[in-house]
Image 1 (tube, rainbow, N blue to C red):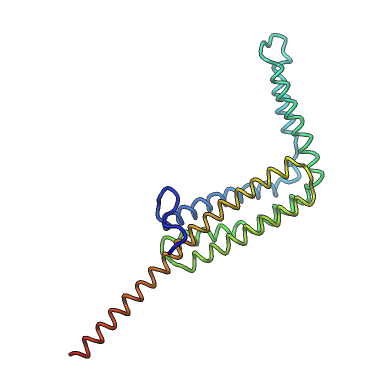
Image 2 (tube, rainbow, N blue to C red; image 1 turned 30 degrees about the horizontal axis):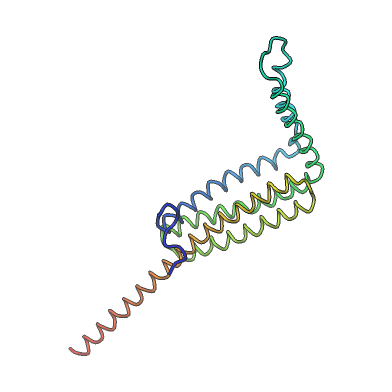
Length: 215
């Protein structure tokens, strides 16, 4: 019996496995592009854009004839200024570590893209070994993300930053764990299908032998 009888929205585990492969492949490609962009322009990554945002929020209030609510604008501008200060402090603490981790992700993500392609092919063609390859790749990726996160946490103590990344990682863990359960359920269905075929083939063979003996 498979762990799950059906995927989300009552779809089959086969359909769910194909959809999971497509979704993760698209997300992996997008994330790979982001990682390449960060690594390629690392020296240009700063918080100046936050200062520009803060100035744009305050600009209307500097005009003599402005009749809007400057109190709210100033409150939002102060929040952006606070974020800019925290960004600079975080950069001082972990900028070098961030770069190394993005480089490690750059090395890992293309292989996970390949694993997702294999999942799509394996689910569509019902090739069991390719499903197991994807499950193994997902486990390795999940463990590696936890390792990278632990390294970052060892270099920073900013509570907002740590809490945000921790919650995102927990969410990622549960989503990917559910995806793995769906794919494994489809793998179990394929194993059961193979066993039924062997049993039917064996029964047919015995019937043929018995019939031949009677003749």
